[in-house]
Image 1 (tube, helix red, strand yellow):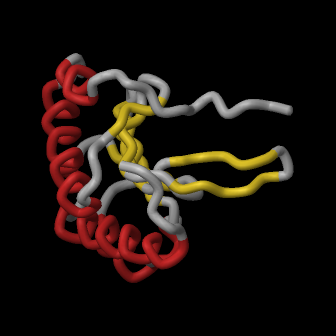
Image 2: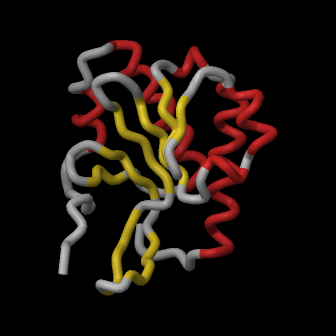
Image 3: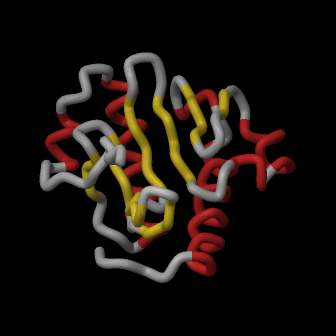
Length: 141
């Protein structure tokens, strides 16, 4: 049975963000941290030393029960990935208004927040969080 590599840690989210070298990316991550903390009402947690996650849910796989964060973000070398577990395809009208980005299934990749409409981005994050509350009973945090 394979084990998930991405797991919550006890490492400091603030220290993680403070060591981001790119000042624009650091500033963008501080804003995402504030938004997601406010929207979720949850304490941020560092997952496997590179992702800031909010909340947790459990899901079943063929290999057993797993835990994952409900939303989060991760500063990467070339961009910031913003993770919402509803997926971005659920928001076609808002995505058209968003700006410059790339997506994966549940990840939005942006170079800088200034490249997207932050009002639209926050709206997507808020709607996603509310939808997830209907599907997953709250766990600790």
